[in-house]
Image (cartoon, rainbow, N blue to C red):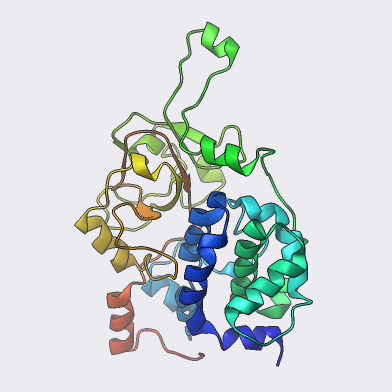
Length: 323
């Protein structure tokens, strides 16, 4: 039995494995790893893989954006510090021996990469889940792995910078510019942030950023900021985000927001503590920021929660064709 087939037989082990793994992951990647598994849950892949008609599936579940992990094999984890070790971790998957528990496989891939284990373990889990969802051909045949745009900061510096205000240069200070609360949306880009007036909802702050983000993400509207949004009431689910840092500066999740997140299916992933007051996945239109935060914007959105799946099963809207 090859590694792909072995991993497919271990689907039930993912939640337990992640619970065991997370304490061993460096703090800089701990929340990021939870976010990654929240953006790319196995349950969502399985649902999409069961569609007899992909166009019908996308319409019924109101899918928007590139939602299949096979389109992001080498880039889906760009917001993890451990992303810089992806090439080594990905290569080590090819040499991993099939057999044993999922935890054992993750540890084996991590060790074979020879990358620091506090980063390699998380990346190994991502690599095996990516293999599970995209298959061996797409996994190995994706474009050559690249570290992408990475900061030269240490993990500790990255942690300190998350949720930090924008600090103007000396020249800017001499011209009267002051430190600015902000929402960081790309930690690797110097301009990857937008200003925040404390107590604003994240989408309200984003809308004041008039850069042409719609050119990079078709889900965005011209002049409406970098966070895709189709409403301001929690009705659409378009504006879900992951919170990398500054969670303590966000309002606590309300019963309404939690119910909407469940309705959209965004809490159906291992590693998520959906009962906490400030979960790592939020609706940006419902989360007020009282200071600087750092976020990740998922590349897709949909409405695929339990009630929508039950409706599909009841009326035969989506036909199951594979397991």
